[in-house]
Every structure is written in C-alpha cells, then in structure tokens.
Length: 188
Image (cartoon, rainbow, N blue to C red; front, side, top):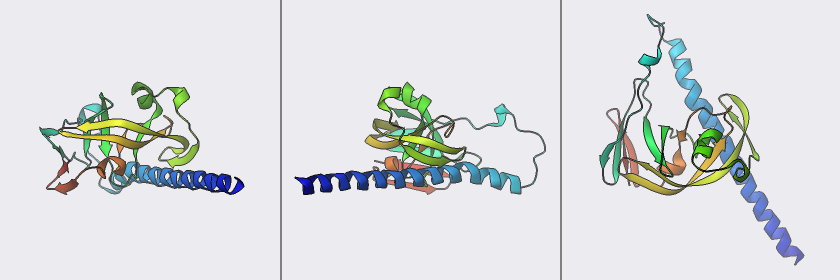
C-alpha cells in the first residue's frame, strides 16, 4: 500500500513538473512573440507620422474550404484571424513558438470557464511580467474549414496577456501547416 502511494505521488509530481515546464515555455514564447516585433520596429527608420488606430491591420477571416484555412500575413508578417473557440468568436495570433494556446482570464470567462473552475497554480513570466496561469482544455477551436477538439490551453491573468495566442497545442493536431508566399495554410 505504501509503495502504491509513493508511485502515485511521484506521477503527480512528474505531471506538475511537466505542466510547469510547458507554462514556462509558453510564457517565454509569449515574450518573444510580443517583444521582438517592437524591437525590430525601434531599430528601423522612424515613421513619418504617428500611427493611429485606423493604421492597425484588421483581423481577417480565413478563406473557407472544407478541411483547410488560409491566412494572409499582416504588414508585420503576423497571422492574425478570427477563430471560433467553443462556438464563440475570438481574435487570435498564430504563434508557432508557443507550446500551448494561451488566452486571458476575461476570454476564459466569456467562453464559460468560471473563476471557481480556474486553478491559477502555475507561475509564468509573460511580456508584461510575472503572472499566474491555469491549465484547461478547450472543447473545440475552429478557423475556416478547420475544426480541432480537446485543445490544451493556458489561461493567464489579464495583466499577463492581452490577447489570444494560438500555439502548437492547436497546430500539432492538424495534418499540416505551412507558410508560402505570405500565406499560412492550415490543413486538417
């Protein structure tokens, strides 16, 4: 009996350590995804006029063909689009450097995850500094003709993440994803 409890406890510690490593990698990816473009912009020549909201790229809808979705890169080379998560529209930035999909707590509540169901037990570092994260599974994520189920996701505190990052926990469930000529093609 004692040896069974020891093995069970060890499995829980291994699982917690693995989730902590995943949270750390996701946080590092979020930092890179949000800070590298700003550094590149600072290094370039100054713009002629200050940017306005009208200058911001519009979030696109993916081209629809059953089993595929095609996203066009914005002016910064990012792939941002309108996804459907658990049936609700959510704007997301595709980030191949993020291990997991990452959403903030406001988005999680809008998707039906109440405060009592979120266990913020993971400490992570985001572009906005240290924050806490909770692990959840999204029932489904959709874009264009692509639909994926049971997607591992981290919920970060609002202060740590302002948008949604669509990471490898979504992308690895696809048959393929590839960038060609400024387009990202997702195939189920």
